[in-house]
Length: 367
Ligand SMILES: [Zn+2]
Image 1 (cartoon, rainbow, N blue to C red):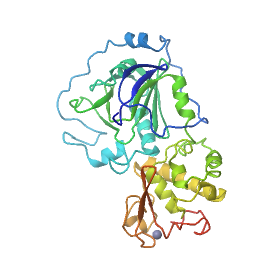
Image 2 (tube, helix red, strand yellow; image 1 turned 90 degrees about the vertical axis):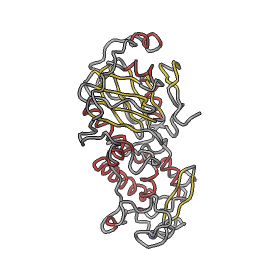
Image 3 (cartoon, helix red, strand yellow; image 1 turned 90 degrees about the horizontal axis):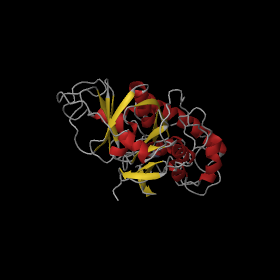
Image 4 (cartoon, helix red, strand yellow; image 1 turned 120 degrees about the vertical axis):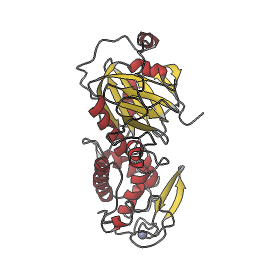
């Protein structure tokens, strides 16, 4: 099965195939409510094929009036959009880096800014999400929200669009007219003022409230949410023999952290990625959490991940991520890499010594 193959699920029923099954690493978070005012919700038929049939009268998408289109107001992108735009919309480094929580938060914010309160048009030029797009077409977006690496759109009529970009997904945006529909264009959303295109997502599905709740209940606390509880994370980390590097990437322990934040957080706190979670002290975790919240909020603000402090920032914006064999910015030792659970670890063996009793243990993120 291709990586982006999943089923459209409606009210627990499969009504069509749209691309990829399940969300890898999509686990839990019970401390967040579903939100959404519901004030504009209208009475709608129960979800299912009947509802689907009721909304298949899609007016055609507006015709493209030319090849020129604008992405995020940055100019003519008849050619491929600038790398900075792709990085902003899709991920922090390149197409092989899974977008981390800060990227999804920025997407939710921009979707709220451009689509919230509008009757949003939707279609699926590729056809694989045609049934799902027909369900949300013409409905008012009440709220877009990020939870970890998951994006939820709440539409009137108790419908939620759920998107997980996975490794290959990306959003692009611009102002009308549309660019020509090219490639595997899974979902297109638009109003008279803006369009959004989604390609390559691991999950793109329309869900009911219980299904959204089930996803959220599987996610651990999200450092970008103000009510996130670091003690809940430590309750998992502090009793686990699993490497801290694996625990930080487990979305049921902590939601939104990906490979870049993991590598950089461990370096900043001088912790060997192989150290068992139970050998990370409560004090170290408390310092790591504060640092992680700060770094991720900074990532939301900048639209990219920057973890180095002056004077190291002049040489690199990260300490170890994807710097295999290059000298550690702090001590000059070649940065090492190793595969753990199918993802690459990056660390400095000197700055992050292989012992729970070495390192300064201060957890102050001095680097
Ligand atoms: Zn070092």
